[in-house]
Image (cartoon, rainbow, N blue to C red; front, side, top):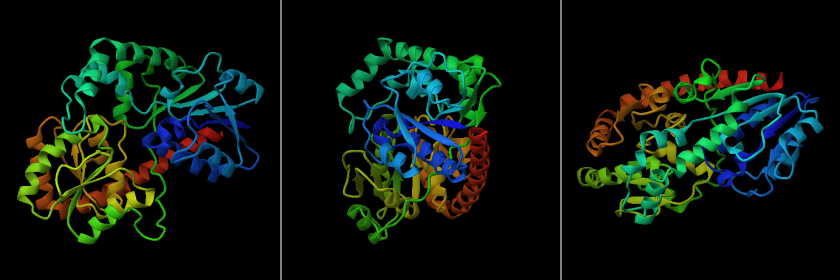
Amino acid sequence: MSILLDFIPFQILGGVGGAASFTKAVYDEFFRRKPAEVRVLAAYDATLPVEGRYDCHKIAEAWGITLIDISTQTLVEVIRREAVNTFFIAIGQFYSRFDLKGIDCKTIMFIHDIFDVERCDNRIDLILSDKQHESGWKRAKRWINLLSGRWDRRKEETYQHIMPLFTAEKTIPYTVSAYSKSALEYFFPQCKNKVRICYSPLKEKGCEVGGIQNPQLSSLIEKGKPFLLMLAANRIYKNAALLMKVFTRLQNEYPDLHLLTLKYGKSISDRHIDINYLSDSDLEIAYQHAYILVFASFFEGFGYPPIEAARYGTPTVASNVTSIPEILDNAGVYFSPFYPSDLYHAIKIMMEKRDLYVEAAQKRYQEVLKRQQEDLERLIVEILT
């Protein structure tokens, strides 16, 4: 049996983010379970970067598999020449620029979310703004892309290209949450009753080597002060602007409270610490020591951070949209991502009743972990049979 795996997520954005984490977690389990007689190949694009958090060449070498450059040959040529029985695509949208015609082997394909479709539908970019972080030109560029129809044309091209394979007879289509399944069925009725759900598996914990590596994180934890934690704060759709506005008020009411953000790009006060990079092990430490995780996102297909934080009993204040309530359930305090007063109210509730939510977070982590393990087990069996 020959299996072709998708290594493109390790290259996009340098292998950083939920796409790369999902792919690595699936493949870690796959290679633990793979019988010796199964032959494995991996598709990558030599025109894209190959170094980052995950270097696809090093991963291929560690697992003893052959990388195949799909920028110089079509996928159907590879599949037929290598007698591929199963093709696993971790992130469907990443294949919108490759020739997918003629693929007739068993294909397992994930579309994690369709934010690019929903962003055009709800026109959320017309109201998003972060004057402290985003330049006027960047904001204007988002408006131009939306109002000119450029994003509409791009998403039409993307889904016209990948949907025929996603809904093909020999394809087993997957997504990562009930919300994403419903969104796919709403915008693409041809998906109705076909899409399976596999909760995104958690990546393995980062290993601590010599304690905390980042000196800013180390200093913050040594102070013993409670801190709010926000990740990916440089991405406009993660809604850091709302938290910045609210923290300005909170720091006057809670003298010991600090804010730790990842990649926001600047600090708004002497109690706001912004870090550009955290290793996997340092990120786990940040989760463990955070007083509250703030997850203010406007959109998530699954949303790792609340469950990664819940592993340590760290509770979350979370926006009440898309997949977030499905994944977090009753283990957090929710707020509307459009109202700073609602986030302010949610954080104050959590500050007063944190102990109750610590217990709820630990319980929810175990529930989601069980679902993740069961879903991953079924997925690996599907790939190997």
